[in-house]
Structures are given as structure tokens and as C-alpha cells.
Image (cartoon, rainbow, N blue to C red):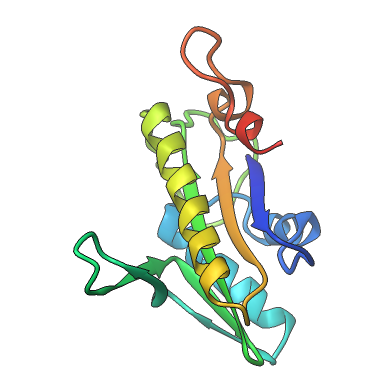
Length: 171
């Protein structure tokens, strides 16, 4: 599996080392919810000073199209550290695996072929936009994450005839 961390602003709380140490414990996930729960547990185990909520709706401070209502988004994970709020969006897209190169004791993985690359790329861009909107309007928060985890090569290699790889958009 490859992952891409899209972060806004400075000082990573979730870095390559964090995800690699999670991968040592959990090399594969059954679903995006399994990934979300495992990441939340992993982050919570690193410090007793953080509180993690799954999922949480936060006010972004935007008004709707009529201009009379505050827009709220639900984020996959929200980390609270002191007075800071760190929103996290996760994507876990799989390609079916017939033959695993590693064994996970007492678990069977039935990963689906989740095609729809252009829609997924659009949804990742929306997630980045939602994180940016939250951070622009909440000055106490200085960082947010979109984490994309996949075993489908098309996301990092792209499809020459149709679209560029996801990482191309965030270099």
C-alpha cells in the first residue's frame, strides 16, 4: 500500500514515521472505517494529552447559498490538543487482492475493486478544500490532514490516456 499525506500549514503531527509504525501493526485494513479506527487508536496511544473524536461535525464559518446559515462539515477524525483542533479526512481505496504476500493471523481480507478514479480524485480535492476552509476561519487551528491510502497503482502512476496521478496535483 502507498499513502499520500496532504497537510495544510506547518508542523506535522502525522508524518511518514507515524504511518509506517501503524503499518507495522496493521499492514492491511478491511475498510476505510477500520483504517479510521486503527489510526485513531494509534494516535491516542502516543499521547494522553490528545483527545480524538470519530467523526465530528465542525463549524466552518461559511454561510449557505442564501446567506443565512452557518455551514458545518463532518470530518473523519478530529484531534483536540489543548485548545487546538486538527481535522483529518481519510480515503482508503482498494484494488481486489487474490494473493496476499503476507499473512495476518486470524483475519481474512476481502478487498473490493473500487474503481471510479476520477470521482475519487474529485472527492480528495473536496476534502482538501474543506480542510482549508476550516483552517482559514479557525485561527486557533493551524494544521489539517487528508490521508489517502491505496494499493491501486493507478492512483500514483496515473492513466496516461485519462488522468494524471493524484500526487501530481499536490507537488
